[in-house]
Image (cartoon, rainbow, N blue to C red):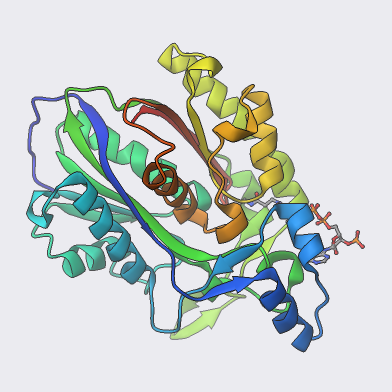
Length: 331
Ligand code: UT7
């Protein structure tokens, strides 16, 4: 890591980007594919319980680093930044291309970023909020001046297509931001949490050892347990971050939650006294893309013109670990 003591003490988002793999599966497509395996599900069940109507799956050979690099290119273009100006790459992912090196190092190579630090963050669906908080801290203390923070996943690779309770929920994609040192307000406050006692309720227990995959390398989830924890911790952490920032619910222009389930998002919005049209929702068309879902939703809101410079955004994530966190920022 280079030590670029910065004359600024704040960090702000200078540009956003995102990508979805072109292969789109509607619920009807998935229902048909699962029926061929003898599994029964329906568009009605999926929409009613989750709000999901479609998701994107990467083709074989397309990895997290490919999606991450595409999203990052867009974010750099939006920020007007060249690869040589980036001195930190953080990729939040639970579906890396390989055991090592990190996806972040591969992104660095793919984009021709000449130096600085690069590493992955593993906090599952909270990964982007974790990555953004780490990058903000590194910029504030002068360890970096311009970071790429990326959430990138190919969750389709770790799904069990014989388990209808999980395989209908997830999708692939990537989202990115350029976070840079600034004298203007950007990230106002953030908070991260984890409680390892709940490690078993959402996990992919397989690992590589002795040249073999040991354990089951597909996603397992106790949906109801995750749901209950998610609705309680998300509202709590959002309120805590608001208090830290000396702001109130009325100051939030947009809620950008992790996109796991429309019912969880609606519950959090209600607890924050926000109307439904203040929540950026992409879960209907993208499913749950884990660490990629928040930056994908952020970029969607920016590109369609809903999110404007100066708006106050509450980003919040929850996921395996159990992990959760929130970031309040002035865009
Ligand atoms: O990204 C990390 C965070 N993840 C989350 O936040 C996910 C949190 N959990 C959830 O979103 C919800 O718990 C689910 C969407 C996963 C499940 O919804 P639910 O309302 O909690 O359903 P359930 O697990 O209680 O299952 C209800 C019924 C069961 O049948 P019985 O036992 O009532 O006969 C399931 O077997 O629905 C059945 N079921 C399905 N039926 C049709 C489960 N999956 C399916 C399916 N199609 N795909």
